[in-house]
Length: 159
Picture (cartoon, rainbow, N blue to C red):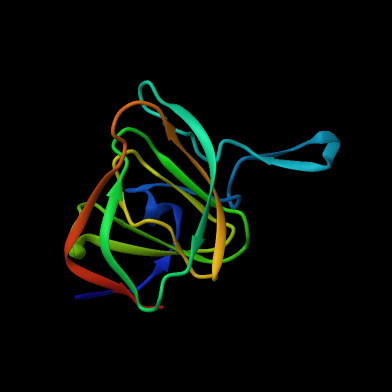
């Protein structure tokens, strides 16, 4: 058994796994006669060969404490992005390999999203609020784009 301690979600720390989607430090400019600000190209969707980038909403529900990490998934054909639609903090668990000792846990603020790079192992959505919605950008198309692995040793996230 291994305890995971969430670390702050930063661009540099998350870079091996994908992209942090946030406005801080982003290229921006005024649009709509100055009544809106565009934060430009925060991430680029990768739908893979023959795929189409689609938008969905996922509604996550909080898991019981301590949060048990017993499996990981990945999408070998395309990237997958999660952007919270409310300002609640949430957790991101990733790994270079589907093994408990490879896990990393990031504490994401409610104004931060992530885009998992193609093939990155991650845990399904982990929310800290009772319920939270996310805009999800991922792939629709032919081919198997979901692999799941059960971990040999469980890990628990303690907040």
